[in-house]
Image 1 (cartoon, rainbow, N blue to C red):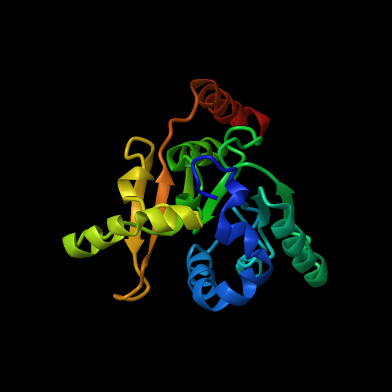
Image 2: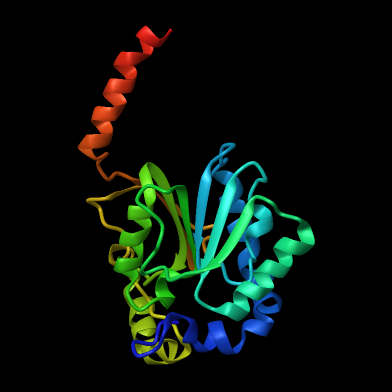
Length: 229
C-alpha cells in the first residue's frame, strides 16, 4: 500500500496476505486498538470514520450507540469486514470502498477519525491527514496508531538501513512531524502501551477554524432562541 508506483491496496502485506490478515494481526494489533477506542469514551450519536478499515478487525470495539463508517480500497478486505458486520448484526456500522487520500465525504462529516496502522502504508501521509482533518468537524478527534522513527540515534540508523526492505513490503517509516500538522492539529496525548512497544498512539484535536458563515448561523440561532420560547 505504500509503494510509490502502486495503488494503496497493492501493498504486499496488505493485499497478497489479506486472507491471513486476521490470523496474523489480531493478537498483535487488536488489543491495543480496542483499548484506545474504549479510552475515547465515544458519546452516543457520535459519527466515526475509520480509514483503512481492512477486514474490520477493530469494529467490535466500537460502542453500538455511535455511527461508524469504515472505508478501504481493497475489495477483498471489505468483503471480510462485511461478513463480520452481517454475522454480528451491527446496524451501527457501514462499509464502503474509498480512498483515504481523496475522501468523498463533505467537510465536517465526522466527530472522530481513526487511522490505525495506515499512515505509513499510503503514498502521501500528509494528504491523508489533510483529508481526515477536512472530513472531521472542528474540535473533533483524530486518533493515529502507528510505528514511527525512533528518537534514539542507533535505532533510527538501523531503521533507515532497512527502509528499502520495508518499502518493498509496502510501508515507510515516518517521523511524527511527517504526519501531524501543528497548525491544524493539537496533540492532546501521545503514548505507548509498553516501553518496548514499537507503536505510538496519538490523539489530536482538530483545531481548524469554524467557517464564518457557520458562526453567523450559530449567532442567529442563539439570538432567536429566547423569542422562540
